[in-house]
Length: 376
Image (cartoon, rainbow, N blue to C red; front, side, top):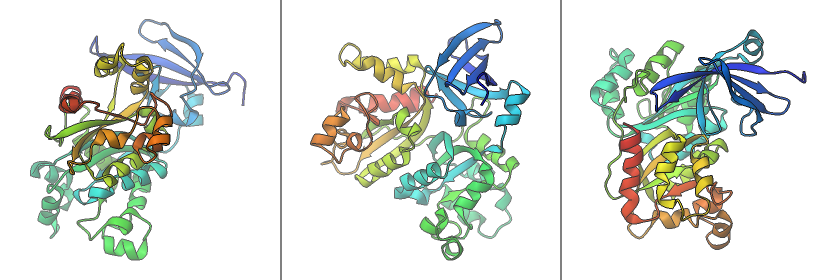
């Protein structure tokens, strides 16, 4: 590898204060993992060459969203032909739609997606109207099972995800297996439908067949014009808040954490991926400022990459979600309560896998912060 080899991208950052996108030329030096940024409008250096260990070469491709010093950047173009030739690949984005019958298997299916090499860049639990379901399944309108399909897909919450990867459209369809789960169990038993599906309607998940349908279906759930898409599922009743932290997502354990929550007897009634900026993180953690020694590190962690917010409902009144998360220090958790979430998935007092509401009276407020204030 050439000592001075570098890769160049055009990156966009949304400035919430100015309500506009700012463009930068981002340079990445693989020899030492350093980055450099130039403000394209003002034609000046924005960031001096700085080593940044949290960014890897595999993260650098057009269409991905990366985080550099708490600033979320969308990579929109290759800035030179060398970068395009060297790093340009078959990276695609597609829709992974988990159907109402995924239920208690939600964490397992997400874990399969992650372990198959896909990157989840957007996620939201929604409830489809009949009209939205008709838009989604317009190509099935002439099929005899059309009405049954609409009734099923609108019968409960679905989880829509944008996933990225090499040949994502084809690989996701292969991972799903045949549409008829009975056939899948016989011919492709290790696929998602082969393992978890029931029939050709209740077959756990959906994936678009082509680049055009993937773009159309992603637009339905995640509109590019600033619209909100289908309505989220937050209930704002008898709930508490859980946030799967960026380090846990980066380490690929989000699916395992969700599975552990469901196995623990709790209901996940809303789910959404967020990219927090520093101002949002400081606002959310304001109650800890001056009280918790790790406040600054907590803020930096929360805006260091995508997080997943969950509305948790306690099915069994004897089970308290705060107790299930465990002590904030994972080392103490592993000693005193080894079965808790932080004991199993935490690394330090601020990279402790999950945030959970500390006081029962604050549960609704924290859920509203994510699913009402931020989502709006």
